[in-house]
Length: 469
Image (cartoon, helix red, strand yellow):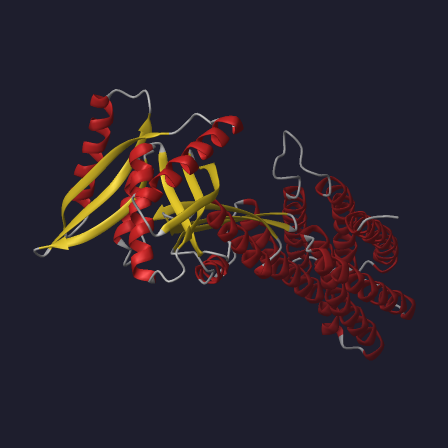
């Protein structure tokens, strides 16, 4: 079973190959008529078809090359070959048009050439019109389906063949009528038809040439970067769009988008925003999207987020961040974690630098109090945690003589969470104990445990009445 990509490659190649066969047929018919009739209009069409044959061969070869996947030497793929092929075709068509213009003016002004029109010639030209219609429509369908600029150029050539052949057909018919009616001036219809053909080729070819040249020079389609920027700006998590760049290689676009995101967002949040931006761009056009993100403080950023961003920028770990007002001034307090083996002078330097930056860059903050504490790195063994749990349970039960409300302590569990020792336990209390008094007792027990075991970061007591445990 073939893949969608393989089917696309095969269909494009078959279209290009059929185009080669059609161009060869048209060239043979028009060259024969040019020799038989001596018509400059038909000769111009024969030259046009000859160039079409060359360009369709170039198209076929370029489509084969452009569909090759990216490699180490061509990291963006080979799509530019299609753009170059279309540009080359345009140049050849314009050169042929200049020759036709020269020959037409020469026949009009200096040397008349006798031509021999016939109904057979007119009929054959009608047949070429049918071939042009069928091939141009088939090529345009494949070109639009796969965004192939080379096939689009080929379709354009066949469509210009259609109109130019119609003009030549009118010219040769006018000459034929002139010979039979004695209207000598109608002999000028042939070179005039050739001039019209040349003008059509130059006009349409210049438009295609401009577009392919812009693709080769990575010019962005008019309004497309602004459209992409507006769509990306609406993605949740995007504060601003700094830059949008895009380039085209064949049928594929490559888009680079630079966005600004809240500097306090986590890596996962930023990655999710990047994926949303990529999807938004692909809804506008098929593209390989690269998103570059820059951190930025959002408007109205919260005080705590601002301070966390300052600490993150310095590579410092902080927690227990709080703030309160005293006499109209804001005082910030936080805990700073440092390595256990770090000398005090170095730890104090880091804390002082962070404090100074907070005071300097945070409006309204008049004082910063930083508590320095070691960052836990050792992971205690399970046996050590069980031993500590037993000691804590024994210690709490020994407090029953001091707290009549306490009946029993059990189910003591000790865990390490983010390098901190966290303890939970169940304490049986007298059933008639008011909740307010129960809270005071458990708080006192927690303080006594932390005093006895300073390594405990947090103790959570679950109180329960007698008989409910």
